[in-house]
Structures are given as C-alpha cells and as structure tokens.
Length: 268
Image 1: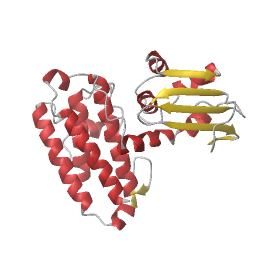
Image 2: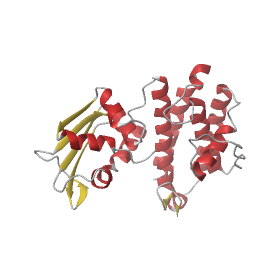
Image 3: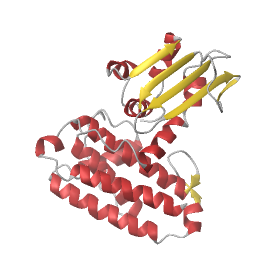
Image 4: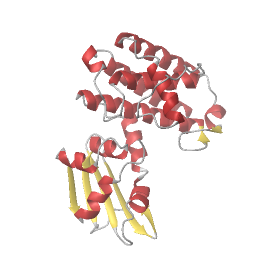
C-alpha cells in the first residue's frame, strides 16, 4: 500500500510542477477561489505543508493576517505562504521541485510498518498511508484550484483524479442523510459523467446508505460532470454556480436536488 500512495504523490507532484512551470507574472498573481490566496500563494501552501512534513522548522507567522485566517491551522498555513510572497514564480517552482523530490526520497525509505503506523491524519487517527493519500487528494484539489483560476482545465482523469473523486463520493451518504436530511424512503442518485464517471445511489432508511444498484424510479437524479462534482464536494462552487455552467441536470424532485447541490461540500 505504501507503493500505491508514493505513486499517487509522484504523479500528482509531476502534474503540479508541469502546470506551474510556464506561468507568467500575471498568472502567478491571479486570485483563486480560496479567499486571500493567489496562484502563487496556493503553490507556497503546498511547499509549506511538505516542508512541515519533512521536518523543517516553520517560519514565524506575520504580524497581521487577513480575514481568511480563522484558526490556528490557518495561521500555520499563512506563515509558510507569507514567507514566500517576495519570491518569484521561478523560485517557487524550483522550491516545489526540491521539496517534493526530498519528500519522495523520504517516503521511499519507509517500511511497510511505517506506512501502517497509526497517527494523526486530517480525518482523525489512521495509518500513515491514509494520511499520504489525503495529501495526494489535497494537492490535486489545489492543482484544480489553479486550473480553474487560470482557465487551464486538465488532469481530470487518471489514478489521482479517480482516487480524489472516490474520496468525494464517499461523503455522499453524510450529505444526503445529515446535511440535507432527505425524507425517509427517498432515493438520490448522483450520476457523474466525464473523464471520471461514477454512479452513486443513496437511500434514506433511518440512515442514508449507498445502494448496490440504481433504483428503478429514484426520487431525484443529479447528473453532472467530473469537474463540477469535485468543485461542489470541495466547497469551491455553490449549487447555483454549478447549474450556471450548463453541465448539471436535475431529474425528478427538483427541490430536493437543489438542496443536495447546495449542501454537497464536505471539505474546504
């Protein structure tokens, strides 16, 4: 399992570096959907997290932070980002290459037991391999943040994209049952098409659970493309913004469908 997550990270970091290698100054300074962060800041954030995981000492946080910094984790993230705001895009890409190569070397030296050792992950206690899968997912999400900001769509297929979409899909029972509180007996089908296609049928019977097969007459079917599904699941778009792309269709109970779209975010 360690080899799998190393492969995912290696693929993702290579794609990330390729995306950033030919950006011009305007693109580096372009705002993203993440409040307070430009493209440059998003890449600096990736660098900072990997330096922290590599064991590097964190920089001091800035004296003043924007309104987008709301908690201690945000403060820690902002310290790494702010420390790099005076660096050129070329310098940032060079640092990204250096730290991801160092991290891959560290990971390749780890044993199976190291990857199975239980400890901190952003989702609670779990094996280190799960933490590293979450890292690959997080880096891919930030790659997509940059792609949307610069209108450079891509890397929506392949192993990293499939793993990431599956992580989004794993939250759908929570979305339908807890966040939306869909009525007892209702069935919601999420039909994702595009580079990564998934069909996820959910029924509410006391609790929401994923079905093995799509019901004959679901209460509502939401058909949407890979990019919108990911952007909704990660809180980058509202339901209305996704609908406005023309790539989202609600079939059946429209009111319930809109509520699902508006509550699909499970992470930020």
